[in-house]
Length: 458
Image 1 (cartoon, rainbow, N blue to C red):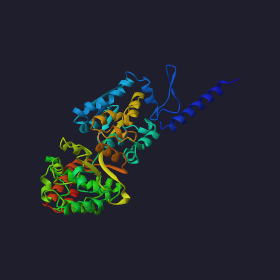
Image 2 (image 1 turned 90 degrees about the vertical axis):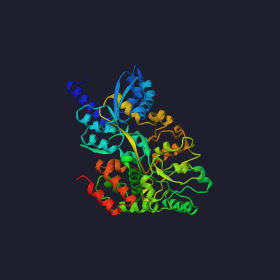
Image 3 (image 1 turned 135 degrees about the vertical axis):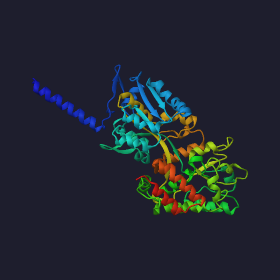
Image 4 (image 1 turned 90 degrees about the horizontal axis):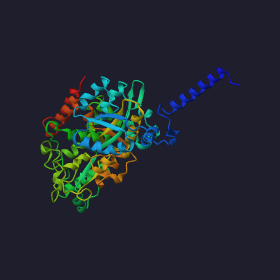
């Protein structure tokens, strides 16, 4: 016969075992055992138990709030993309978009007005919330094995940030876009017998071959109103990732590696070899500052082409002629690597979703966002590229977008636009200005780099 004391000790033992199991799961609801609903077992999904529960209707009628920068048509398309999930689960995802998102989100968080999920257009802004201890570790919300399975190492590393209690997985990635692409007029390119380069040396040899044929290889323009010069900063960022380590790139973005450093100067050596050779650039060096970035690729579509290459982000296709057919009239190749040891880096941007309130329905939604399925409608309608490994490449409407998506997904290193991550006075100020002056020839390279270094906030 059991005594009262033995029953108490048995109960304590059960609680200790349960605590150990919960800790082993990173704090997340264990997914090894199904949950019961209405007498029926709900088998867990790879993402977590809560997503399975949601599809079983267990959270019907609940609300999950979300904030981010999507406005106008982007907000409409985002809401369209999540509607199938809302219809299946009965969870109402209430998204509020704001054009002042970046300026207001930290004020909201500090004031305790925290949305359940926040969409950050770049990771720099999220770091503040992580350092304050506001953001919840994704490993406690989503099965960590699923995160490792569905995101490349490059994307996983970008999501790791340090909070008050150490490193956490601060968010999961949704939409992505890349800038490490060279677009070209495919029909004319193929007719000329040119071959797509896979290394920097091959690209430069092809550049010379096109010039020897009496044509102009590159279409380059950096005019963009008050933002003139950002195209040059993108080139520097992309080439820097090819001549030095990701850690040095991060140090440069943080102001720890000087602009007038050997690494940045080496990157500029490669750029100058193209930009400052009048035989290589449409209109010559002097025309670059006055040609709008959106107009720069247009000569590629003349008959015959006035230039052949335009290095730019995947968004540039919206500036191509409406009648141009992707995969027929134009295509792209990956901006080639320089030093093999740095692999195949990609420069770009993306949306990272962070969580600030932990409830079962919130877990279900963030687990859903960790799947490619959450972006399927948006991908098929155009305007979205997925960072998820399980996103089907056949969802993309054309071969060019499909190839861009595959390149972004398979990047060995992915880094965000450096100027976007720097203090505004530098990234959107002196970096743009002095690079423009340098390209136009009004100041020297050293003067430009020294001036940017001097402008860094102390």
